[in-house]
Image (cartoon, rainbow over all chains, first blue to last red; front, side, top):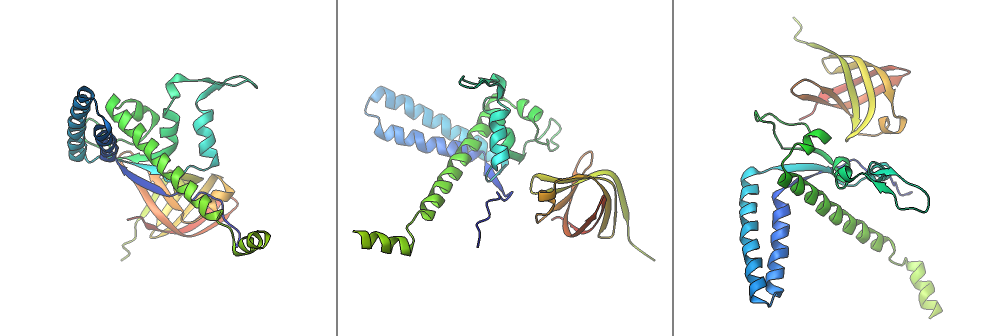
Length: 176
Length: 84
């Protein structure tokens, strides 16, 4: 049967606390590998601060919902909405205001964040810009980590597809 | 005595996941039967499943799963059930 290449519009919910848990794991690895006592002390202080952020994020319980995978058009828009102009053979001019943001806007389809009165705040470019800096960073990191995971899964899928078929294996064995 | 309600609205849309499949105008929902005028549609997206009928209200969004769908020119008729 032919392989369908259409990207199914599946949605994944990402807990924002997982961004800090991931950061904690990285910091703990650095602490283990750090031999300089001064640098190790500074890293341990970062670990404590990170644990505080995890506690806060657990209390908040906030999440974002993202597209599991971008399709070709969406992937293109991450780039085209970033570029001001582009000439052949030259580096494209990017809009600094859009760096990082176009990816969030393409990926995120919903979130748990609320307005001043506690009512649900629909996700939009304006609503995203209105969040505090820490929240924006959490969202950006959550999207980056999600994209990395999906890239890894895609690479794994390709590896499986490239496993030699029985007839290829027979041909290879006959040739050797 | 009939307990059926009729809901009407000026604008709504059909969605496949987050993709907009069609813009609808002048929709009417009676029991589980939806009729509307199709203002615009994407042929590929509207042929996918599952589709959702979405209406944005001032404070909330109504979502219905589309069970059956017929589109003839700009006339749409469908059966829908409220999304959990």
